[in-house]
Image (cartoon, rainbow, N blue to C red; front, side):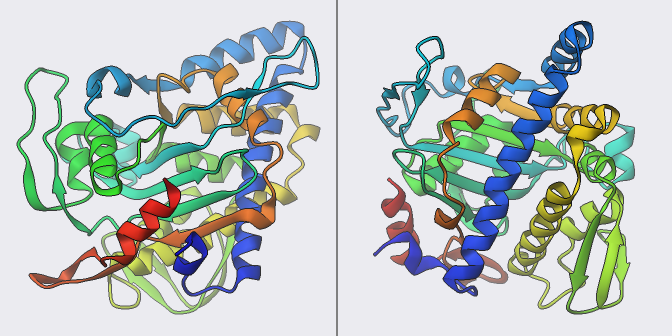
Length: 356
C-alpha cells in the first residue's frame, strides 16, 4: 500500500494543486529572505542579523540522544557550481507544529496559553522523499489518544509514560522534545528537523500580507476561537485567520477533523495571497513579512539560522508541485470516548511504513 492510498476527500488533481501551493510557499519564503538580503550592503547586514536573531531553537538531538529511530543516511549531490556547497538530496522528515505555547500579552489576547497550559494545535509530519522531488504532508489530529513515552525534562528527570493520553499533551508536559519523541514513538520514523510557529507570529504574517480571502461553506459561531462568520466569502485579517485555524466547535461535528479541513482551506488562501503579492517591489513589506516569519519560528538547532533555512529551501528546488500530497493519519472514534480518536490500524501503521 502506498501513500496515495491514504488520500481522502480529494482527487489527485486537487491534491496536486494543494501540493503546488505548498511548494510555492517554500519558494516564496526563499524569495522573501533573499530579497531582504539584497536591499543594500548596510541594510542587508542589519537585516540578516536581525532576522537571524529572531529565530529560536531547541537542541532536540542532544536531549533525546540515541534512544530514537535511526536517522536516514543522506549524501550530498554535486552542485552545478564548483564554488557552491553540495546540495543534500537524502530523504527528510520534518515535524511542523502550530502552537499556543508562547506566553505573553500578544498571545494571551489571541487565545494563547500560558507556560503551564501550552498545547500544539496543529501537527504535521512533512516527509520529503529521496532526491527531494516528491513530498507527503501527514496531519495528526490533536485529539488522537496515544501512548506518550517518557520524555526528558529541561530541569532534569523525565515525565512518566502515559497510556491513552491525548497526542497534543506531549507538548504541554515536555515541550518540543516530548512532541518529537511522541511522534517518533507512534510513527517509528525519526524526525530530522522540527519547526514551530506561534499564535501572534502567524497573525502578524497574515496582516503583513494584507489578509487572506476565504470562502466558508457553513456558518461559523465558535465562542472558544472567538470567530463568528456567515457562510460565504470573507477577507480575514490576522486575528480572524488565526481564529479560523483554531475553530472546531462551531462547525460540523465539532471534531478536530473538521478543524483540519479548515486549516487546509486557510493554507490554500494564504498561499494564494502570497502568490498574488509582489513582495520584491516593496522592500518595506518584504522585510515585514520576513520579520513575521522568522519572529514566530522555533526550530531544532539544525535549522536555527537563515543560512540553514535557505540551504533547505535550495535543496527543494527540484520538488515538483504535482508530487506533493496531503493526507491525514487514518483514525477511528476511540471506543472509550466518542470525542477522541485512535489510530485506525493497520492502515495507520502502513502509512507510516510507506514513508520509512
